[in-house]
Each structure stands twice: as C-alpha cells, then as structure tokens.
Image 1 (cartoon, rainbow over the protein chains, first blue to last red):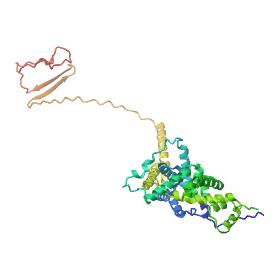
Image 2: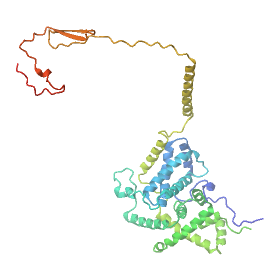
Image 3: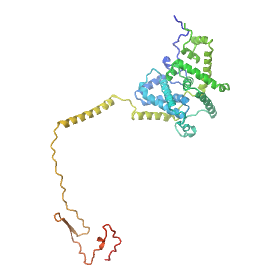
Image 4: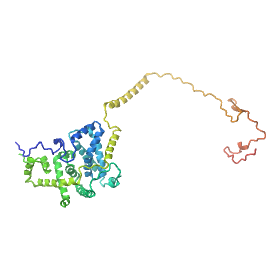
Length: 225
Length: 192
C-alpha cells in the first residue's frame, strides 16, 4: 500500500475558492463572494442596478489587471468596458461553480489576448494616451480620478511602477499574466489555472520562470533599497 | 511509496502558505533540493516588489462614466430594453405574425371562391357648362355673356359703359407689324 508523506489537509483554504468556498487568496480588500452571488442572481433576472453594483465592485481589479497587461490606459479602459459588456451578455450562462471575480478575470484574459492579436505589429493603431493625462482633465469634472499621494510619493511610486512595468514587458504574455494574477491580484493557483485555461503545473512553471526573470531584471533596484 | 509532495502543496509552500505539519514536511523534503529553496526565495523577493509597485485595484478614469457607458451599451445592444423577456412578450411575438399569415390565406381563399360582382360602369360626370363669371370693375356696368358653339363665337356685352368718343384712336400697340414676340416698348404712345 502506497504511503503518502504529504496528506492533504482539508482545512487548507488557500488553493482556491472551489475548495475554500470563498476568500480570495488572503489579499486584503478582496470582495466577499456571498454578496456577489446575490447580486449575480438579481442581475441574471434582468436587474440592471444589481449589475451596475457588480461593475462598481469589480471594475478596479479588472481595470488594474488589464492595464498591467496592456500598459495603455486608454486600451485598458476600453477593454475593461468590453469585459463587463461581454460578461452581461454571458451572464445567463454563468454558473456559481466559479467565483464571479474569477469568471470576470477569465473574460478579461480572453479580451487581452484578442486585443494583442488584433493589434498591429508596428503599433500604428495605438490610441493617444494623452486624453487621460491629468493635466487635460477638467478640474470641475465630477468623476476626477483621485490622487491621494503627495507629489514626492507619486513620483517615487511612478518611477517604481515604470521600472516594474519595463521588467514585466520583457516577459512573455503568459509569464506576465501568471505573475500579475498571483503576485499583484492575489489569485489562488487554481483560479489562475482556470483563468488561463491551463494546468496547475503550468501555472507553477510560468510563475517560476517569470519570478526568476524579474528577480534578475530588478536585482539592482532591489539591492539599492 | 510517495515521498514527494504534490504540486498543490509545493505551490503553497513556495508562497509560504503552508502551516504546521504540512509546512514541516515540505521543509524537510526541500532541504536536499536547492532548486525548490531557490524558487521560494524568488517568490519572497518578487512578490512584495510587485505588490508595492503595482496596484491590485485601480479605479478606471471617469469611473461614473465607465459604469454609465456600460449601461448604455447594454441597453443599446438589447434594443433599448434590458429587462429579461417574459412569457407575454414571447406569446405576442409569435401570435401576431401567425395571425397575419392566416388572414392573408383567408383573403386569398375568399378571392378564389367568391364570384366577382358585375361591374356597372357609371358614366363619367359631365361637367356642367357654367357661364363664366364676369367681373365689371365699374359701378353701374352690367355684363352679359353669350356663347354659340355652332357659330364658334363668344360675345360679352357691357351695358352702361360710357360711349367711346370718336376722337379716340386705338393705338397701334396691337399691331407692331413684325414678329409676334416683337417688343412694343419703342412704339410712341399718341397723345390723348
């Protein structure tokens, strides 16, 4: 009889919502899945207000994930819109087997890959990003994006972000997405496998290579701190 | 005998997400496997880096407009109605075209069965020959109109008009002596 030194402990809830029944991988600020379920149920009945609430709850994470993938605010904005419109269209087919957020990430994954395929190689079709620059935003606009950081913090944060984005840009899209979903978005391994349509082993492999490359690329920055 | 942790356990161990006996078991297993220790070290270094440099959630610019545009697009794609379909609408969607088709077939059948009624063509109404209305701008003048088709003549009699003096000569404007469309502007008007 085979003996397993590493028996599975049923109490472990980090692998994913399918086993844990909720909770997004210990990331603070993760939205409670129970409330999502109620809103999804109402939205499936045609309640547009409920769907609007779902959009409000998830738009920040979806937009951030897409922006980190495409590195263009305008494209990220448009793609995020596309995700929520497609999600509405597919909502009747959504089953509560997966968390709503994981399902959204999966739609976002498809949207990003479609976008990457559509984009012309020379980048000639890029939309001008200036339209979202803060200097051009009407100060009286009601929905002005908030900027709570001080100018120094903002500059340092932007600089750090630029370096990380430059490093991420050197990764393949698969490696980049795996590391973003895990280390930035905080998804569980199983969720990442669902989103990326691959096995758990593939997720681990992609994460390993992505982290290895990032460690090498960001080594100087890391040591100077 | 299985002496290796499965990949799920290893994934959790790399992310420092194991506790207790599970963590201790994988720690013991990895002690002789530097490549796995390296993986865990990479994760420990890179994870906080990315988390501090990139936001997990970031409100899209113009967040209110973001929602409003989605709502508008959904309404537009749904033909202005986002409410789910219900049984009544589905019934009418099928009932109305079916009724129209049945009506057309009934009319066609009736048209082939019923004999057409004899058509009596009424004569065209003959327009009444009305006398023309005669307008006399001068008070006391009466006008009468006579017409004779056999004679192909029309006569208008004005009664009460002052006699035209013999000295009055009709100017030659009526006869320019040239082409019909010749101008009469150059003909001198005779003094009264």
